[in-house]
Image (cartoon, rainbow, N blue to C red; front, side, top):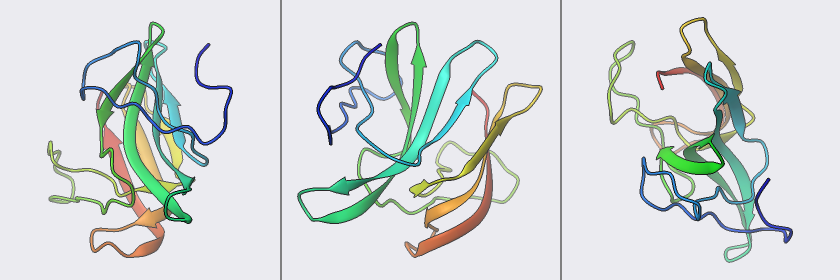
Amino acid sequence: MGGSNVVNQPATYGTQGTAASGNIPGARNGGASWTDASGNFWLFGGYFHNWTTGQISYLNDLWKYSEGEWTWMGGSSADDQSGTYGTLGMAGSSNTPGARHYGVTWTDASGNLWLFSGNGFDSTGTQGYINDLWKYEP
């Protein structure tokens, strides 16, 4: 369906919120995923081996795959980002989960995407196991 036949490929982000044939998430492991009520595939975060630094790097980018194209929907194009938590229980456009891998995901009856936990970065930039719960309304 798409992607590269060569390992360790970087992402092509394009313009956030705009689908384009050239957009594609980079190679990663342990990303969180959902399928929404419209059949769109969603992908969040994960980790990759940064061959430039020799380190493992974590992602917090959010992607949607629909009608054969990827759209970068949120999060950062930079790695190892801290979470921006805002006010507990209140939606906010600047609220963003920190970079992580292996979170648990599900969708509810209203079509919201839910993310819990994983290994990644908290609000202070500390890396470790997280027990935060996030809700995203597509």
